[in-house]
Length: 375
Ligand SMILES: *Cc1c(COP(=O)(O)O)cnc(C)c1O
Image (tube, rainbow, N blue to C red; front, side, top):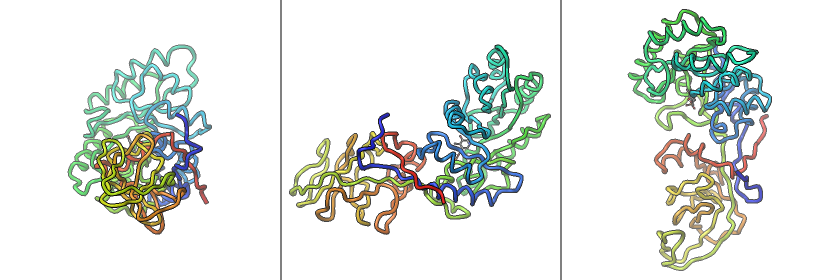
């Protein structure tokens, strides 16, 4: 995708904030527990390579991604740390993963069987590192009972093409105040863990929410994701043990300013009509940048004041009602701090009826990322 380098719209990513969030978390971990940074989906929209670089400086000793291509991109960029692909990879790519020393998630014995032809073709430089996923209640991927887990473990031990590097699970409700379902999942995982004959190097159960609020469950590795970006995994339900520092700001400028008369309409569908003579500013941000149409009626910050998004959000532009005539070039903040006021990704998500994860991931590559370096 073409990046808009000649348009005054950008994401500003504070790498020091990312570093501080990770350092705070590492301080809370048991000395035998390591932190792997989850940098999938272009680092939750923040930029995978830059986030991974900062995470490594902050003490992360490995990375988690969702798909094999993300892991390969990290290797391409020169990262030599362990990398785990959290989703299911086609067994046809087992050898590609093994050759690049990328660890894959496995949730069935069939997968191991299907991966053998790939691993047995030609010379194999290294065995494939596998993390068995346990479905303790997420209902997404993984072994659901001890018998199938044990059978797969036995099969794996009989085939030198594989080595069991990890055992893990994923919690569905670690970010909620009610811990009933969490505890059921934890008990199920412990029961599955006990069924393994060999102890893998990494036993891990913690996403950000689990590590923040259920640290007693942490195995010897945590998969730290959304919180490293300074976002509270629970939204506003639970208070984090230390202040998280949001890393992302979204900024633009007014590119056109005009006064319209009472009754005049703005944008597609003419859904907005001015009540009186109003000053209107146009901002070069639209749904093609990830600013969804449903954000009509929400606001941006200009000179510390909330300015309503009026009329429909277009593909590439949106209009805001200004308190007065303002100059073209005036700064517009869609996320972040402006004139002493703050507009958070959580505020945006609340208005759009979703979670901040989704707003951040939706920000497209058309918006350039500018990095404020770590200290
Ligand atoms: C995405 C993901 C994580 C990270 O979750 P956060 O809530 O962002 O910390 C951890 N584990 C798995 C399996 C995931 O898919």
